[in-house]
Image (cartoon, rainbow, N blue to C red; front, side, top):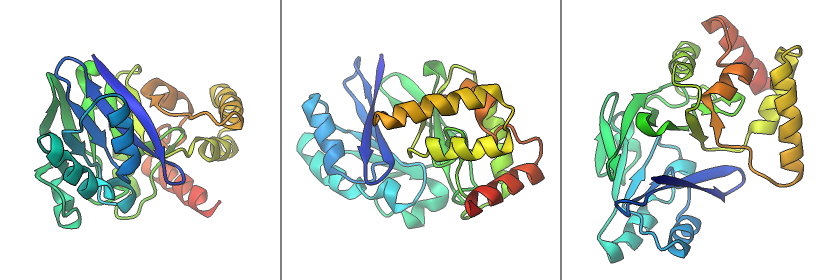
Length: 244
């Protein structure tokens, strides 16, 4: 059985701890900082033996070195990240790209190349467990900014992720849901599922609750970027969101 723990850090980042009961292995996904991640593992009696990075931005790799240093006390930590961004992530031990696999115990994650937010961005898809770690590519009711890639790449990413089973749990790296949802309503004001979701998100955030993970099914119904009919429509929506 896999357990996933959400660790809020910085202003709106989430680091994910992925733990396999059978093997006792623990993976930290996109650790922005080290101490809260190490603390979360420690109180559960877990030791972090791997880090999976989705892209090079500092709020996703900033905790790599300190976690690896701490891990010397329990046998070390292997850091995996995108081969296309290896020069920007100096702490990597293993580089991966499209179709490569990483493991936690007997659970297999296949690497998906999802460039657009950054040129070498990847996601980790555990198909049998219905889990995908998407970094800053897909958000609840949103998608990542196009810092190093194109709208065409993001359109392809959205289509590819939308093709995953509806019950796939999506672990993204930021709490952007409320602003994403409110913007989405300006684009699809007659989307009843979207309107209902925004109401629920507003209530959750008013109580200080997190709104992720999400699911592929929920995003198919309410994510205006995943629902874009063509590249031009996605590009226009992304530009409007950036300007909002």
